[in-house]
Length: 445
Image (cartoon, rainbow, N blue to C red; front, side, top):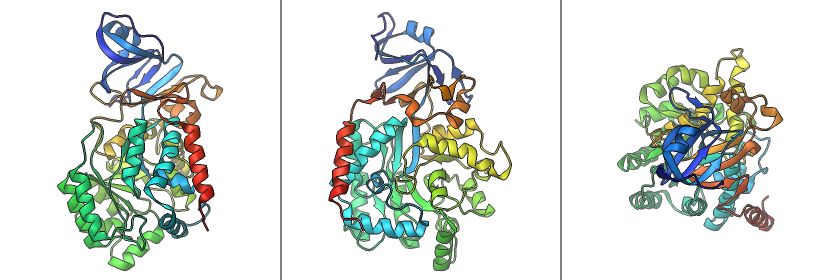
């Protein structure tokens, strides 16, 4: 943080200036030597640095010379506390992965343990320029407390998964009432919305899915669900209910603009058309899908049909990383494997990690781009590395060359959570040590 701007203009809390500003607005505007002005957590101005320095008197300034200023990355599907089990379920199928992880979760998860694991996940995310995440997991209240302490934007809420011995020992009927109380008591923070999580069509019955969807609609909540992650899941649901997962959700009336599907790898043409017709969104998780051998989601076909597609990392067990930049780069590459280098271009991949992720969450009006009136979630990425030289195209740099370690500063609601690569709201070393101690005490077999 550098010295405050000279007095004379309208007061603002912060002026980020001097870098190239990649707004990710509809026109794809890039402002060389640009600036972003922030007041009360909101962007109040974006434009040439000279103009904004003259227009605003900033209490603090952040010099981004030699850097790229871009919207904070949105992780549209993850399980943050799975950092606890990172590296413990590698090189297995999705079904083998679930068998291991569900057993460990039942034995190991508690509010305190989730808080410990989420603290490390937030540190990792902030370092990677991720300013918000949609987090489906047990003991979401503990995750929310940690995120609030760190000043980080977390989208979470009650999770439904009707399995034996759930970690919170709450039966499905009691869980419905608990979720209702949670939604009723939820404060509306700018840049967030109520969320409910239904794990999948293979861990919840059609009747349960219908009840959960009704509850979500009662409170205007986003409903998030795993669907069509691999062929085995599709076959399981089809044998059980006579319909494929997306077909089943459509028949139940669940598809719509307030439903976000995670993965959507195994889709038919008719299912893609149904997603487009209903305005249902998808969170694409290329790293996890490849690592679990699930396949490659038909993202070019989804985009061509008009389906909103954001990017997710999944949990740190199935992807081993919460680095959205890695997912961004892979999304820009893997769909070219069929022979079309234009299948998902650099700009499209960056949009999937920012504005399209925000759109998938129903929050494009407040997140995902650097425009006046939106929340001041932004990243300053250092362009000084040899792997980023020369600086021709910011979209290309982000999609094909940038790394998480290039992120220099991360801001949420205008608050600097990382400055000059040092976390400011979270003791990273203590968080890592606490997680290591927890793992050392655990008996994972």
